[in-house]
Length: 191
Image 1 (cartoon, rainbow, N blue to C red):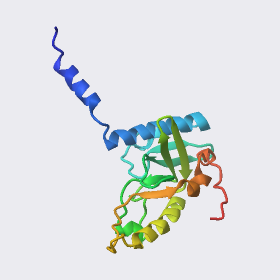
Image 2 (cartoon, rainbow, N blue to C red):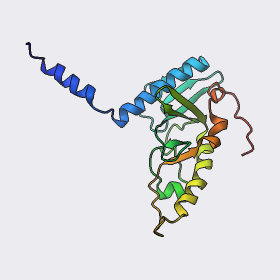
Image 3 (cartoon, helix red, strand yellow):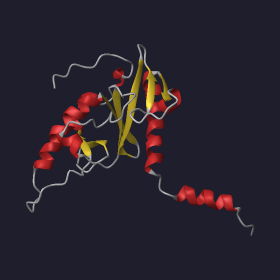
Image 4 (cartoon, rainbow, N blue to C red):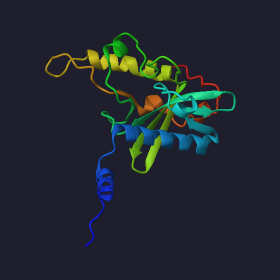
Protein backbone atom coordinates (compact mmCIF):
# COMPACT_ATOMS: atom_id res chain seq x y z
CA UNK A 1 0.00 0.00 0.00
CA UNK A 2 1.34 3.41 -1.00
CA UNK A 3 1.63 6.15 1.64
CA UNK A 4 -0.30 9.33 1.01
CA UNK A 5 1.70 12.53 0.65
CA UNK A 6 1.62 14.86 3.66
CA UNK A 7 -0.20 17.58 1.67
CA UNK A 8 -2.99 15.11 0.91
CA UNK A 9 -3.36 14.26 4.62
CA UNK A 10 -3.48 17.94 5.55
CA UNK A 11 -6.11 18.61 2.88
CA UNK A 12 -8.24 15.73 4.18
CA UNK A 13 -7.93 16.95 7.78
CA UNK A 14 -8.92 20.49 6.73
CA UNK A 15 -11.91 19.16 4.80
CA UNK A 16 -13.20 17.39 7.93
CA UNK A 17 -13.01 20.51 10.13
CA UNK A 18 -16.18 22.43 10.83
CA UNK A 19 -16.35 25.64 8.82
CA UNK A 20 -15.14 28.72 10.65
CA UNK A 21 -17.42 31.75 11.10
CA UNK A 22 -15.35 33.50 8.40
CA UNK A 23 -16.00 30.61 5.98
CA UNK A 24 -19.73 30.75 6.74
CA UNK A 25 -19.90 34.51 6.20
CA UNK A 26 -18.03 34.24 2.89
CA UNK A 27 -20.35 31.41 1.86
CA UNK A 28 -23.37 33.59 2.70
CA UNK A 29 -21.91 36.46 0.65
CA UNK A 30 -21.44 34.19 -2.37
CA UNK A 31 -24.98 32.83 -2.00
CA UNK A 32 -26.38 36.36 -1.66
CA UNK A 33 -24.47 37.56 -4.72
CA UNK A 34 -25.78 34.67 -6.82
CA UNK A 35 -29.35 35.18 -5.61
CA UNK A 36 -29.26 38.88 -6.51
CA UNK A 37 -27.78 38.17 -9.93
CA UNK A 38 -30.31 35.39 -10.64
CA UNK A 39 -33.43 37.17 -9.36
CA UNK A 40 -32.65 40.76 -10.34
CA UNK A 41 -30.33 40.37 -13.32
CA UNK A 42 -27.91 42.87 -11.77
CA UNK A 43 -24.13 42.86 -11.58
CA UNK A 44 -22.85 42.28 -8.03
CA UNK A 45 -19.26 42.45 -6.77
CA UNK A 46 -17.39 41.99 -3.50
CA UNK A 47 -17.13 45.43 -1.87
CA UNK A 48 -13.55 44.89 -0.65
CA UNK A 49 -12.40 44.24 -4.21
CA UNK A 50 -14.36 47.02 -5.92
CA UNK A 51 -13.46 49.69 -3.37
CA UNK A 52 -9.90 48.37 -2.88
CA UNK A 53 -10.19 48.63 0.87
CA UNK A 54 -11.51 46.70 3.85
CA UNK A 55 -15.17 47.70 4.10
CA UNK A 56 -16.45 46.52 7.50
CA UNK A 57 -19.97 47.92 6.96
CA UNK A 58 -20.58 46.47 3.51
CA UNK A 59 -20.07 43.13 1.81
CA UNK A 60 -21.47 43.61 -1.69
CA UNK A 61 -21.84 46.40 -4.23
CA UNK A 62 -24.97 45.95 -6.34
CA UNK A 63 -24.89 47.87 -9.59
CA UNK A 64 -28.57 48.83 -9.65
CA UNK A 65 -30.28 50.67 -12.49
CA UNK A 66 -30.04 54.17 -10.99
CA UNK A 67 -26.99 53.95 -8.70
CA UNK A 68 -24.85 51.39 -6.87
CA UNK A 69 -26.29 50.02 -3.63
CA UNK A 70 -24.06 48.93 -0.76
CA UNK A 71 -25.32 45.74 0.92
CA UNK A 72 -24.38 44.10 4.22
CA UNK A 73 -25.03 40.33 4.28
CA UNK A 74 -26.15 38.46 7.41
CA UNK A 75 -26.78 34.74 7.82
CA UNK A 76 -29.44 33.31 10.13
CA UNK A 77 -29.39 29.69 11.29
CA UNK A 78 -31.17 28.17 14.26
CA UNK A 79 -32.48 31.31 15.97
CA UNK A 80 -33.05 31.01 19.73
CA UNK A 81 -36.78 31.74 19.45
CA UNK A 82 -39.28 29.77 17.39
CA UNK A 83 -40.48 31.49 14.19
CA UNK A 84 -37.78 34.15 14.50
CA UNK A 85 -34.93 35.29 12.26
CA UNK A 86 -31.51 36.30 13.57
CA UNK A 87 -30.74 39.71 12.10
CA UNK A 88 -27.35 39.89 13.82
CA UNK A 89 -25.63 37.09 15.71
CA UNK A 90 -23.56 39.46 17.83
CA UNK A 91 -24.81 39.97 21.39
CA UNK A 92 -26.19 43.35 22.36
CA UNK A 93 -23.90 45.99 23.83
CA UNK A 94 -25.03 48.66 26.30
CA UNK A 95 -24.38 51.30 23.64
CA UNK A 96 -26.54 49.52 21.02
CA UNK A 97 -29.42 48.70 23.33
CA UNK A 98 -29.63 51.75 25.57
CA UNK A 99 -27.84 54.56 23.71
CA UNK A 100 -28.98 53.91 20.12
CA UNK A 101 -25.55 53.00 18.72
CA UNK A 102 -25.79 51.46 15.23
CA UNK A 103 -26.14 47.71 14.88
CA UNK A 104 -25.20 47.47 11.20
CA UNK A 105 -23.21 50.54 10.12
CA UNK A 106 -20.89 50.58 13.14
CA UNK A 107 -17.75 51.84 11.42
CA UNK A 108 -16.68 55.03 9.68
CA UNK A 109 -16.54 55.02 5.90
CA UNK A 110 -18.93 53.42 3.44
CA UNK A 111 -22.36 52.58 4.87
CA UNK A 112 -24.76 49.82 3.85
CA UNK A 113 -27.99 51.07 2.32
CA UNK A 114 -29.58 47.64 2.66
CA UNK A 115 -29.10 44.54 4.79
CA UNK A 116 -29.72 41.15 3.18
CA UNK A 117 -30.47 38.35 5.63
CA UNK A 118 -30.20 34.76 4.43
CA UNK A 119 -32.37 32.72 6.78
CA UNK A 120 -31.79 28.99 6.40
CA UNK A 121 -35.16 27.43 7.15
CA UNK A 122 -33.82 23.94 6.39
CA UNK A 123 -31.15 22.34 4.18
CA UNK A 124 -33.28 22.87 1.06
CA UNK A 125 -34.83 26.28 1.76
CA UNK A 126 -33.38 29.73 2.31
CA UNK A 127 -35.59 32.76 2.88
CA UNK A 128 -34.24 36.17 1.85
CA UNK A 129 -35.04 39.36 3.75
CA UNK A 130 -33.88 42.66 2.28
CA UNK A 131 -34.38 45.77 4.39
CA UNK A 132 -32.82 49.14 5.22
CA UNK A 133 -30.62 48.92 8.33
CA UNK A 134 -32.46 51.73 10.13
CA UNK A 135 -35.78 49.88 9.74
CA UNK A 136 -34.34 46.69 11.21
CA UNK A 137 -32.84 48.65 14.11
CA UNK A 138 -36.15 50.46 14.69
CA UNK A 139 -37.96 47.12 14.91
CA UNK A 140 -35.48 45.14 17.00
CA UNK A 141 -34.33 47.66 19.64
CA UNK A 142 -37.65 48.13 21.57
CA UNK A 143 -38.29 44.36 21.62
CA UNK A 144 -34.81 43.73 23.02
CA UNK A 145 -35.17 46.49 25.62
CA UNK A 146 -38.43 44.90 26.84
CA UNK A 147 -36.77 41.47 27.07
CA UNK A 148 -33.71 42.88 28.86
CA UNK A 149 -35.94 44.70 31.40
CA UNK A 150 -37.81 41.48 32.24
CA UNK A 151 -36.14 39.75 35.23
CA UNK A 152 -35.20 36.08 35.04
CA UNK A 153 -37.43 33.50 36.79
CA UNK A 154 -35.27 33.73 39.93
CA UNK A 155 -35.71 37.52 40.04
CA UNK A 156 -32.14 38.29 38.96
CA UNK A 157 -31.53 40.87 36.21
CA UNK A 158 -31.31 39.47 32.70
CA UNK A 159 -28.05 39.65 30.73
CA UNK A 160 -28.15 41.57 27.44
CA UNK A 161 -25.82 39.00 25.87
CA UNK A 162 -28.51 37.65 23.57
CA UNK A 163 -28.65 37.78 19.76
CA UNK A 164 -30.68 40.27 17.78
CA UNK A 165 -33.78 38.44 16.50
CA UNK A 166 -37.12 39.42 15.02
CA UNK A 167 -40.29 37.37 14.43
CA UNK A 168 -40.83 36.28 10.83
CA UNK A 169 -44.24 38.00 10.82
CA UNK A 170 -42.62 41.35 11.60
CA UNK A 171 -40.16 40.84 8.74
CA UNK A 172 -42.85 39.85 6.22
CA UNK A 173 -42.75 43.22 4.32
CA UNK A 174 -39.03 42.67 3.72
CA UNK A 175 -39.20 39.03 2.59
CA UNK A 176 -38.08 38.70 -1.04
CA UNK A 177 -37.97 42.51 -1.40
CA UNK A 178 -35.83 42.18 -4.54
CA UNK A 179 -37.23 45.43 -5.92
CA UNK A 180 -35.17 47.35 -3.34
CA UNK A 181 -31.97 46.00 -4.89
CA UNK A 182 -33.04 47.22 -8.31
CA UNK A 183 -33.03 50.74 -6.88
CA UNK A 184 -36.80 51.16 -6.61
CA UNK A 185 -38.35 53.24 -3.85
CA UNK A 186 -38.92 51.81 -0.40
CA UNK A 187 -42.46 50.56 0.19
CA UNK A 188 -44.77 52.69 2.31
CA UNK A 189 -45.53 50.46 5.27
CA UNK A 190 -46.92 52.86 7.83
CA UNK A 191 -44.97 51.11 10.57
